[in-house]
Image (cartoon, rainbow, N blue to C red; front, side, top):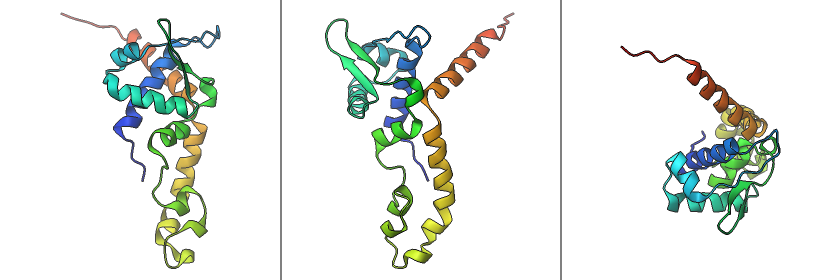
Length: 159
């Protein structure tokens, strides 16, 4: 039901990189250049420019020009949700307006009452949408930090 485009994958990688560079405890805002983000995430610079501009226009990132410029988060990690990111990059999550808008009147079926798409997928879409609204960039970043720390704890043996 939901497709995650390459553009969304890259957006998530870039946002996680910006998130990892910011110091939440000290409330320090990290400014990362496009080149730095592109290098650490292995995203082509030209494509990344478009993605970062889209995220900036959506109010997720902000930018500063100049030699010391770059991109940083517009809001705290706790205020940015996965649903917001996905919609900013790819638009509506669902191609059926009756599901996306949660409005049976928006249904394109001849008989809105018996729409098989809405009747079948509405419960699934509602749960998925709720999860995407609840899951924040902070949670994703924390999960990544935990996985990285566990990976570093694993002893490496060689013979």
